[in-house]
Length: 244
Image (cartoon, rainbow, N blue to C red; front, side, top):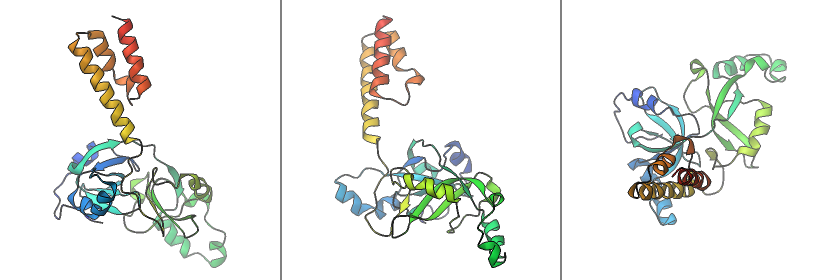
């Protein structure tokens, strides 16, 4: 993992203020990260800042983020310029300490697999696929912070969760490392349409303000039209025009 900050200062308060959850998409403005993907920028024909997946908050306040292809980097909270919230994927996983104890069991007991009590709830962070395209390794953040032992080791998730994850092995949803194939530069699915809706709403807001339509301005500035969509914006425009 790489960072632009060789000696990062304490920034835990700033990092926690972001309130990020695993698999939230964050837009990263990091020189190191951009340098790593300069070839992708040239292929794409534009140098957009990438959206990558938030993984975890480090003890020193840096943020671990991951590209859609599974490359991890450390960035300062000030390097985050946009956040797209995601719904975490919760799984049942085996903590590292439990796994070590399981290794010490007799072979006959290990052959029976893990007990239900061996699993703890966790949020999925990323995964890798085997050469056949199935789930290989999974990395998680346990909901109980005391169970997290940060490092390069992966955790075992329950068999039902492994089956469930087959339908979620998409780089538009999480970081997925594949033995073969080109890695996505940015997890920016839906960003262009979102930005278009923001421009549409901003333009309508300015026009209403310049025309002195106070109620229409109020309708467009209501918090309940977020996330923005063309339909929600048009409903606000209609509601505001009807109250004129």
